[in-house]
Picture 1 (tube, one colour):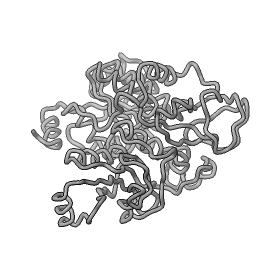
Picture 2: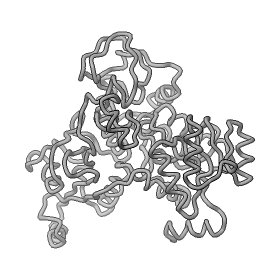
Picture 3: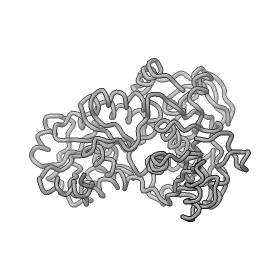
Picture 4: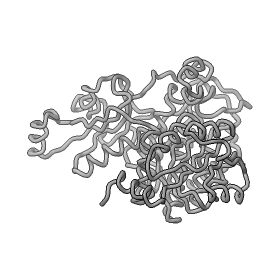
Length: 432
């Protein structure tokens, strides 16, 4: 089988580039467009973005002239422009799914409502969909993956985020019959549950980041979302609500993430978690084996004397790795990572501050809530509110800071497309 670079070079030579539409041109989306402009066999042909000038500037950054770009929400006009070799910018992400000259769509907004809609439209129009929107995936991923399979298209989380990077290590370990004790990531920012866009505004702007995105990282929500996505793709579970998140070094990972009777912190094998320390921006899988000969080989190979061994990757490259997922989807019809038939873990909603009756919740990375993680079966039994559904919800009850929020505590937006997909998923998919 030809490798990816060679296959892509052949596509380029034959004039059959993979034609890509990207939804969202923030830090991740714009970086992806820039990178793909250097890769043979691929081409970003359309961008969907509310800020039209921002999207145009992204195309201009890869040396396209304005006369080569059409701005329109009209399907026929956009399709004609692509047929003529021009690029498309549109405010309406649904247009991208309809275009005949797009093979795959990358969703890079990070907004659950938008991500669910874009994925659904892509699948409905028989287009592969690469999700950089983990927020949508952990909410309705099983349903979207089922719909994609039925439609004969690929639905996948993109490589580069921690779940995809960890899944590579997980697949390596399980292919070689190792037992997975724990899989996780190093948290990239100090943990502050009370972080807000205002408190992080200065540092976010210095990094050319959206303050809400940085808030989602710092308050821990993103870590919970990432590990839930991994759980739903592998069957690994959070050991406790919120995971342990110990402070430790790389050298300590295999001893800290061990069973309690072996000196570690875990009550069971097969868990997801995260650590604070020098692990970030890396990812890890802690493995074990009962095979005496294999233990001897691992010791000889300087992996240690056991009982646990560490597989560690010191980086994840976020949007920079997403073209790998695009190529795998198009050329090999393989996902990088996707939710299986049922949710294994749920990202639940916690009060970031005291909340009062009638108050509107502002969603992920905001001022009112943050995410934690729980086994999906427990979340269902306790009727805990999924974080992805929180945007625009109105409080029915007073909830104190640090308490979890249930469905009964809020009035949800009944017009939400994401909510309606979630209801279908809850009706037809069991929770473990």
